[in-house]
Image (tube, rainbow over all chains, first blue to last red; front, top):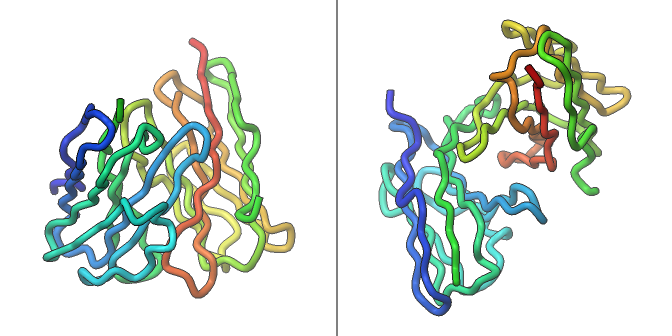
Length: 114
Length: 111
């Protein structure tokens, strides 16, 4: 089975540019999570969806960040405009509905904002 | 911290030795999960232990849960160089769907 697929794997762009990160969850999974990982702050949950509906976006740092899930097989995380402090590794994860199920992570997008 | 602590932050041992990592939490959990992260990769789920369980095994991994102390331990026996990675504890608190990750333990196995 294919795991969670994220693209791109690496992104380098200049500050002020729009950045779009993409995620394809595991087929049949009901939950999708976006995380950000940095050395300073560790792994932070940004937002999660249940059946394509955003449930908790309290971790989204600012209005510059937005996430969508137009269908069960695709989600995007957008940063506009990007800033150097947004540099991090962004992970997408998905899981089944039942509470005692693990999350399955993609390999992340390493984002560098110059 | 609000989510609890993990210790040690870093651990370096010789191949063949056992490695123990600890995790604490603050309030009642539904389950606690352990994940491994290799450099440059995503997190991989290792073991999930429910709040009514005290011990689980998976190969060379053993996880214990002590709800009276609000703590869990991950033991890796007979360590191998390939076990070198960061290990994270994730708490699923009661009534919540999301996981709260700690800062992790960076494990190095020396050949």
